Length: 66
Figure (cartoon, rainbow, N blue to C red):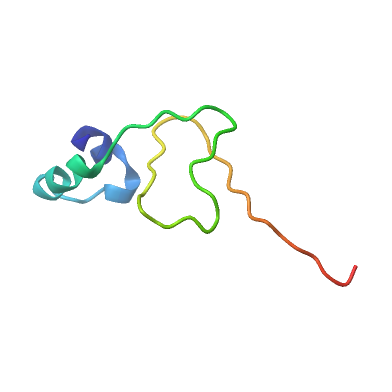
């Protein structure tokens, strides 16, 4: 996991001891196309690092007065 974190821009600049403390908290997770990583309103219990592929962020909008 340290090697994966080391390649992520978010963690760039962190030294090896810091990455070593953070790495055990990470868990690999495969997500298929169309699956949700999280839904709006879910508690922020983790951070997602996308190693490969793309994600789409969708925000609900409501329009009134039309």
